Image (cartoon, rainbow, N blue to C red):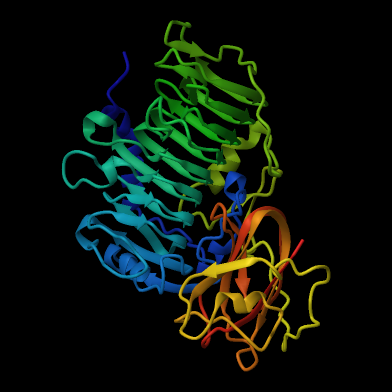
Length: 515
């Protein structure tokens, strides 16, 4: 007979108590380590860079996190928030401002973009308070512990999810996190890592998910099928009843994870969901892969996995385990590069790297842990010209001539049309230090380079920026300074240059576009 979740927790909680009693000291990464690049599906759809190129602030309470978001010039102004200390419902108040839409009792990342939330110093613990990502994009959450978030009892936060994403969320990277509960639904907890209602291009990497009835889901019901793709790699799932994850109609790439004590079921693609399951290690678990609790089938592609003391139930009307000898029943194409560790070393490499407070160590692809060198996360940087001139173009036809234009924050006396008239004597300037200007065409046009020319007397004023696919909102690249900017060739009807910070009033004389 299966023991209640609360009883199964005793040994694990005893281990945590022992660590606290013995005063274990863990080395923490420097703030710059947060710049290590995203992996998996978070690299697609324009990539995930978080707050790269923006300001960095420190927060020791949830209210201060909200204040940092709200103090930005706009909801898209890049920011890195370094968190140290214990965040609780009691120290997290609603804050208002131009750069936020917050709520009390939850870390609310709603209607915003370009944010990194990273634990530093002595560590960041979100105790009984969840992180809620809603209608947001380009978000990084790194090196944090989120524990004991409840949907019933007291206090409650985030519907009981440690990290929850919903309502038009895309490009999120959660890395080196520790997500913990102390039981299942009957004890007041829900999922550790949930995605629903059009959440796309997410990666969960080098994280620990432990002591919960539910690991997480992609899709809240069998009719919520417009989510994913998602990548899960080098994570440790331990003492979880089910949903590692549950995939409703979504595609997931699941590789090099270490699963220990999955008590009822594990990876559960259903309602057309697909999982590519590579080089994982499953230990002391039951029904680690298959379609369960529904007659709506899901599919899997398997290779290189190790099943160590795994038991399998018999097939039934609503029970279709992949084992005892799992074989593929679909194929899944992966669009990004990745390196697989051998499944035999997954327990050791994941134990050495996963979770908060591990120094952001990662696998070197050969079963050894290494600390990555912090590198800029933008995919390309502009070549800045000290004095842009009409002749300093990247070559080819300037596609902006004859196109249309629009934008935001237009200042009095300037026109968007001034950036596409071929005349460096005219310019567009936003009404403040930030704003955006776009070039648009009546039909899809392939663009791979732009050239931002600053007006005479304003050279060097433009600070950080992003280039966006105006059709989809995807970030094509980000950086700082004017000049020639290159990115992967993209077919679109509108390309946007968004200024997110400036040293003085920015003035764009020409916004040139090239194939």
